[in-house]
Image 1 (cartoon, rainbow, N blue to C red):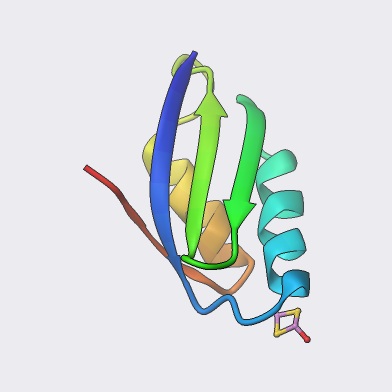
Image 2 (cartoon, helix red, strand yellow):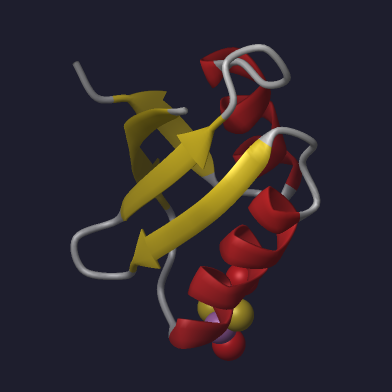
Length: 71
Ligand code: 9UX
């Protein structure tokens, strides 16, 4: 398991947070996803054999929010 953090842009209300959490919950290899609205932050626990940081970013983008990996 690997814990990753992403800056998430564009979330303006609690519904946005729920949208991101739900989308991440549908992604294979994600065992836990926690999203903070303020600041825009997603903490995601993945199995690196099943999911990649790029896939996490794509999933957040599909929910119509921007995402960049924190280093
Ligand atoms: Mo709130 Mo976000 O009304 O996608 S759900 S702004």
